[in-house]
Image 1 (cartoon, rainbow, N blue to C red):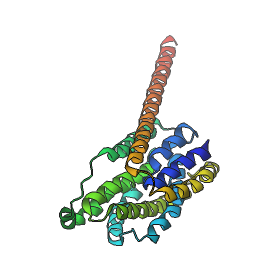
Image 2 (image 1 turned 120 degrees about the vertical axis):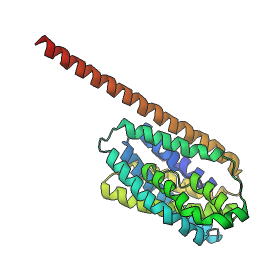
Image 3 (image 1 turned 180 degrees about the horizontal axis):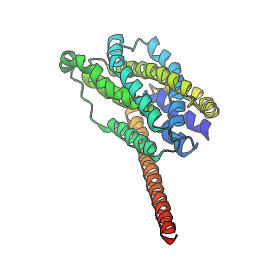
Image 4 (image 1 turned 90 degrees about the horizontal axis):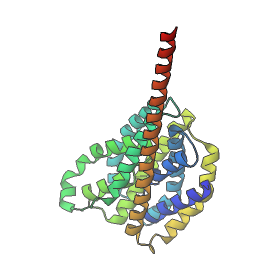
Length: 269
């Protein structure tokens, strides 16, 4: 099952250049049973390997803009460090429903960005590209907390604040996500929050999946596929919201019952 999930996610990444974290994390939490922190760490390293394989396809066609990549990284890397630290701080309780709930909200919001109409205005981009580091800061923050965001949000920012062609946007955003994945993976590796058995199973299907996707990228209508993938990711994020909310309510009910029971025993004595 994990290998099949890895293949499907990787094929979608190769075909569309999207960020696979939006549904890798829900799949690892809901299907593989990992805790939030371990799911994010595993998804980071998985995404890094996928992007490492996909990047040469775009580098070979010179579809990467180094100046815009640098502007994005200036803001996103500090945000990534803050987001990773926040996840580490909140996830000390491995099964924290609050973290699951927040992850679900962030992933659903990130996925919904796909449905926003993207308008590229070259003159606007030339005059306002200096804002890119500040716009990339929250992208790094979300990426550090959830491993997602670099794909959908990075694409929207580049399409509105650069004059690059769509293939250049995809290639630049892919390398942007790769850098964030490498840095995020290093931190999660040091925390010990990566499940190697699950990661290897994902890669077993993911490596051939991303190659398959990159080879077919020009033959498949990417926009329609992106919409379908975003809908799946949105549903997965909402499922995490439901799971986190339900667990939080049940925990509070259990704690209230315990307190009530202890109070009753105290009065009886």
